[in-house]
Image (cartoon, rainbow, N blue to C red; front, top):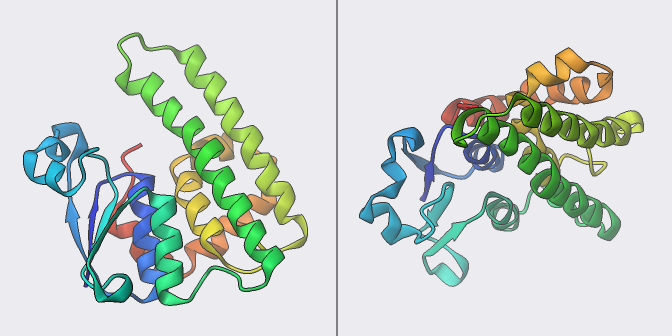
Length: 208
């Protein structure tokens, strides 16, 4: 059994979606981040960084328990464990990693910065939020172009799609307001229609 320590963020949803789509048994331990529930000694004993998501897999490699942080690393781990959503063909696998990293190193930081500037930082700045939103949309335009002649980011459904999707849900209002991303919106609808995706999203709905 895999234990998922998570919260109401797109990072947590990403892992829950992957667990559902892989058909792996798991249970959820939720934390209210704004209440500081992730700052307890008990949670720090699981992960010293005190960040979600975290999985604890009682049946890790070689039958040994494993604790793993970082949602992208968890996606790769679960894909290898289940033998799903990581293409076997070398170029397709490379593309899956390319779009996984774009989601995690470019799209996610832009979205997170919007949240920080609007909610968390001492000096709020609408101008900074707008700047990060424009940067976010620039990255999403790349994904929209990528989907012009294919259904999924890596030619087959993969960890790349599951990595990017929760952020696009969180930022749906930005996508709809700016417009001009029809292929990305078609891709969103296709993922939203998958039962595993729907269950995963419901397991950890976003708070931003």
